[in-house]
Length: 475
Image 1 (cartoon, rainbow, N blue to C red):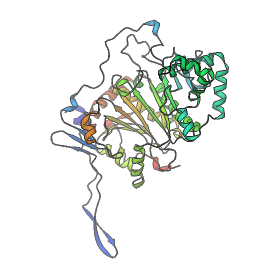
Image 2: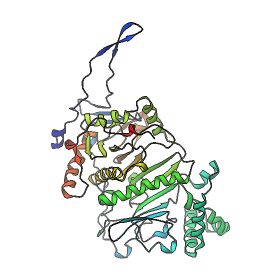
Image 3: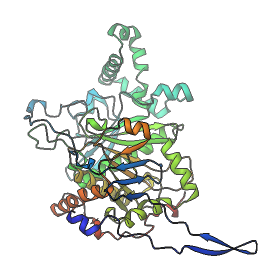
Image 4: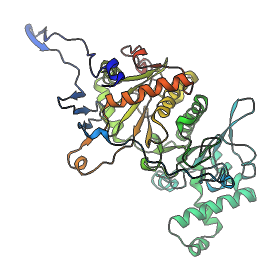
């Protein structure tokens, strides 16, 4: 047993024991009602197998003894020295290839005095006049295209977006930029140059409406490799950012999420996620988040909301409270808490905001920073070589149910296969206790080095029951 396991144990802290029954009055006669215990979402068998049940989705997961010894992470390529001539041009998201993406919607720059600024409506001529630490650009291949919203809902570009499109196309550099990107997209879609030429410039520009008013955006970080990198194994991930840089990344993503709702009144939810490394679904090994406006809440939220209606305090009781009873809390600060999740297809670290505000864009700067600090620390502790998905979950805008903003960090260390498809029981090779034992020592080391923000770790955490305050403000 590891030193962390000896300190924390696996499940030594349990909810208080309830009496077996209690007498109550019913139509004048005495009726005995048993108390209902909290469900056991984690069960450890004698052979070491851990069976898990997700309290919100109902997903069933097993961690079978002996299958957790598989290697974690991907094997990075043999180091190859970076060519100085390719600096800033390693992929289409790099700072030397701004014209390879559709026209950006905004960018975040850092001034020499350390202050940050978000700029909008940057023209094609001005793209290289500042260095964008983060950029918001339309996804070239949207999940839901502009045509989807236009044909199904009658969606049209808002006046301010039409003005932005007209201004960008009015300059020769802007028009050339848009036409080049449109042609590249059409070619990738299988159209020949002859077919594209037959569309004429007006037809090609019409296909560019999604570049300005589409609902699928990408938030791109500046670095492909860490500053000063000498070989191709030194990728820049979320965990290699400073805590302040990561906070700007998170806050900018929150702002951009709210902007998509403002853009399209038919959007019911904006899915926010980050795919890190190709095994996790990334097209480029370049740090970026994706925001996708959709016209449904999604099955996962519908299931969670059904449970929430019957128990408004479920995120406390079956989330952070249960995790603390099982000694799965990994880290905590004043406004957020992180724990090893249970009932997930992949090893998952869950980070919950304690804020009263259910919507991320209504968090204070301090509350957003607290969530960011924990997310950043979990990425740093996971390491650059671990493929992972970062998923954001928050209250859909068309419900009055209160729920907390929470971020799931999922390690993509296995591939779903035939057993899972046939049984809908998923095999997760790292159980929550093993996940905790891998992360906690890394966090102590990173905190000692000053790489992550100050926070309480493991047994230092107060783990107070009902620490999530989302029910206090349902507006």
